Image (cartoon, rainbow, N blue to C red):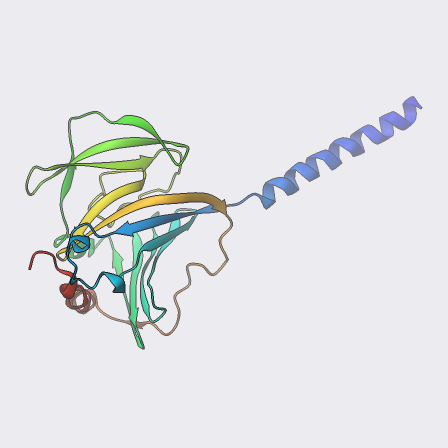
Length: 235
């Protein structure tokens, strides 16, 4: 009996380790965050084109890469971002009917994108920890460098994506932002995460459809600004 036990014990240990390894392989290697989008300025205007705008954004991420997809009421409208934040390069894309365009952004031309967006800096006010979606987060105060206004944002501490905000006005923030407001090209948007879960993204989740034609950034942004001009609250 002792001899049999000595023979079976190593096999049992190996089997247990293999099972543990298999369980680790099956664990999700990424995640998904769903944001609700609201438009504080437009919601005050009964004559606005609010019904045309996306009310949700889905962020799918894995290994310092992520995809942001805006969910429009109609399938013919597309707006998104495919971002390799580790290498600091990204693809901006939009589609309106058969008109599908994309442009490429990297550390060499990101300044051209950011020059028309709000500029923020960290304040001397210390952040404090909060629970958000049952996760440990931080509430941080940031300061507008244009009018000295103070804004609050909520960031998720335990979700590590390197350089996640590198091509946004929040590039001084290292963590993923769960709630924030942003005004771009005259339109104010408020993003609030409503769910976060671990998933294993599809292998091709970062792949760009061949229907999207390349456009240089200057022309791409010119077309985006023209489309968003009908939602300008400053006019």
